[in-house]
Length: 218
Image 1 (cartoon, rainbow, N blue to C red):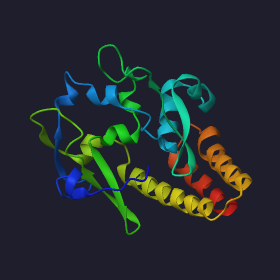
Image 2: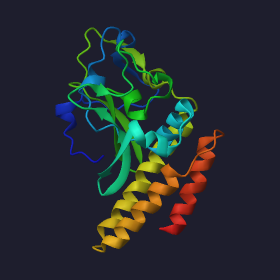
Image 3: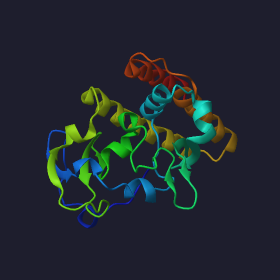
Image 4: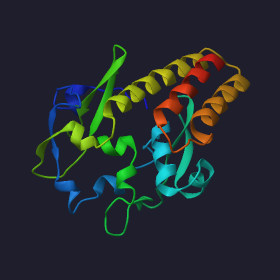
């Protein structure tokens, strides 16, 4: 999701890598689930998130659409996001005990919080959103540990490549006023990267096969 940011206003003024220590440790959010309760339809899901959810819940994309995710247009591209219960009830995966029901397979945006990403020069770095989490007395923790993602190097490469692929698609869609072309490109991307089932084997191999197909097909 594209946002206009003034880092001086929203961050501590630093940019981080996953090897850096950041003051975000919160004792595993003990006694707090505020971010899961106030969240709106802003947790955009990338293909890795969908692969994780499908494995964790033993459900395909169509089944997820029934009660767990929804589609919306984000920066001109149709993408899935976590479904949020109405009337401020929060994320559907938030249990009555205030804990995440899919913590081991939670989406990348949830893993990062309260960090964000800023993309520049074909790469990205993390920044700390200092106004987003009100948990007191935070401690320093290595960002890599906070993210808790296996094969983090491969994951970060995927994140970067997916972001810049979407930017390319945005550029293509921005150059046409033909609604049929816009719909066709959107459905191609949605079906190829989300609806088409992933095997339980190596996600990244499957993703890059599809990415190559998309680069040829668009």
